[in-house]
Image (tube, rainbow, N blue to C red; front, side, top):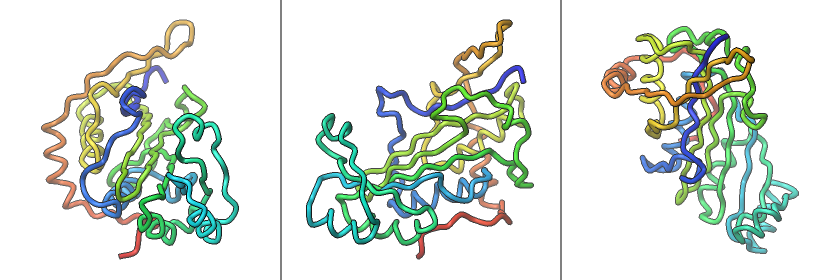
Length: 236
């Protein structure tokens, strides 16, 4: 592999995540899980956390009964005086956890998915993703990190795609991703990594302009019926 492309969302100076404003928490969550079911091999989150925003002894005891023993993020608390207590929840119990968290404005649900991208029609994993280098141990694979409540909704994205060039086929694929996501790609978030003669990976900003393709994909997306097993969604 001589080159590949990445999308790193927003810079840390912008909060490191996309703000989501299109609909309710439930709608956004289902949007994200539908995207994962259609474009990735992910079928379950990597980890799920429930964070208590403002400490309350009543809420603390109440949710200990639901989620078990809590954990304490003292470093974060000393920095912002919030988000001291959190619980690691079972990914398999997300269907029950989601409505419980959304019903309390003092709770925040944090969900991380890691995945490889798949072909839109066949569902097969796009080749060569296992060969992509690890640029950051915290981002070994493509991932989405959702932090959501009824009041706060953000989504961090880290995408790695084994595209050596942005030909028509690859551009159409990126446009289809954009059509299915609940945020707009940042034009400054794309990089093309090429291997130097010394074996190092060198990033260069990439101009990805596909607005017309995105509009076409939005029209075609409604006609695509996925036969793959969906992720666990929130009950109606």
